[in-house]
Amino acid sequence: MTALPKDNAQTTVSLSRMQGTTGPDVLDVRALYKDHGVFTFDPGFMSTAACESKITYIDGDAGVLMYRGYPIEQLAEHSSYLETCYLLMYGELPNKAQMAEFEATVRNHTMVHEQLQFFFRGFRRDAHPMAVMVGVVGALSAFYHDSLDIEDERQREIAAFRLISKMPTLAAMAYKYSIGQPFVYPKNSLSYAENFLHMMFAVPAEEYKPNPVVARAMDLIFILHADHEQNASTSTVRLAGSSGANPFACIASGIACLWGPAHGGANQAVLEMLEEIGNVKNIPSFIERVKDKTSGTKLMGFGHRVYKNYDPRAKIMRETCHKVLKELNVKDPYLDVAMELERIALQDPYFVERKLYPNVDFYSGIIMRAIGIPTNMFTVIFALARTVGWISHWMEMISDPQQKIGRPRQLYTGATKRDYTPMAKRK
Image (cartoon, rainbow, N blue to C red; front, side, top):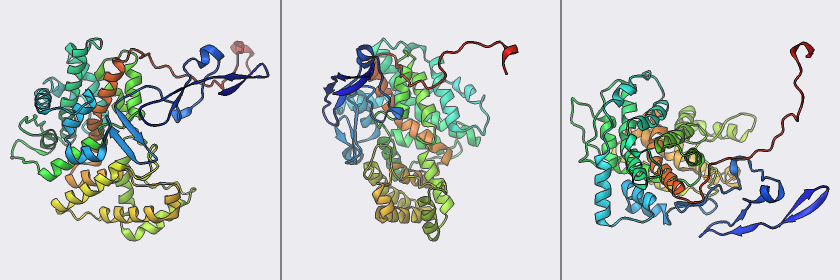
């Protein structure tokens, strides 16, 4: 029940309460403007559910993340990225035959149209790989005309497979182009993660064999980043898709949103912070600057818009980080800085009271650095992993009979009506 002012009086409005299968209830305000002439005001959508979804559930207070009801910890331990893709797309874990068919379909779509090579050459060599990805993914709609009819369920599925299959190829091409090396074609005898590493690091002159520990770490990074409910980029994909835009354009819009440093650039920011600190002995002074609100210094990789507890993905990444560094015999001084920062943040009352726990970005950047992936590729890999989440939400939205074009309202605070003044009469 909500009291609304109307003509200096109070009007009581009844709002229906809606329940999901888990999580907070919501109030149905869809008829609020039609019936009462008012909107809700919620900058950043902090308390607004813009859609109904069956894909991912997050309980930030409890540190819970589930894909289709399966805890992320179980998927990380037992599943693979492609099995997780099947789960996100279709809602259930596949049986053996379904998994074999799914993997074969992904393999059959890993190559990209040969003319895309010429598209890459239109970019400067020093262009940011995310700028390249926005362009080339959006351009896929110019190459694959047979999967653009969003009213055709089969064409939607084909587009989904093409995006999941080709994203590693395009990401690796963006990297190879930036360093002046020849593009490496997909090798379908390899797993999804192995194939990506092969396209990233192989050269025609030498044989390349992916390290299984590194490949598993890469697969885990993909799983942990596959979806994260209605975040900024997913909401962007849904909003673009609500207009009827083709799936390639919608995913390109998600990539553009993810590029923002407040969203997908966090793991790169963590590396830059660790480099700035440089040594464990410099941590105390850095922490003091973080606590000083006038300093402008931020503790990157800690805290989360949703999680008010330890990010469940961070625990998995922490263990994986140690395994990768041990396997590669990497003595990275930034890991020592990271471990000490984590210890302090988990004990210092300033951070504990503010629930600034390490998030997944805190460790994933260190892992990718150890593998040899440059920082400007971190967000590209995030986009690669998140593609299945974006396309799953897009497919869910398109098949929803209640789907409407997105049209957020506003609280107008500009000038009221005024008459045009001729130039000669203006002061």
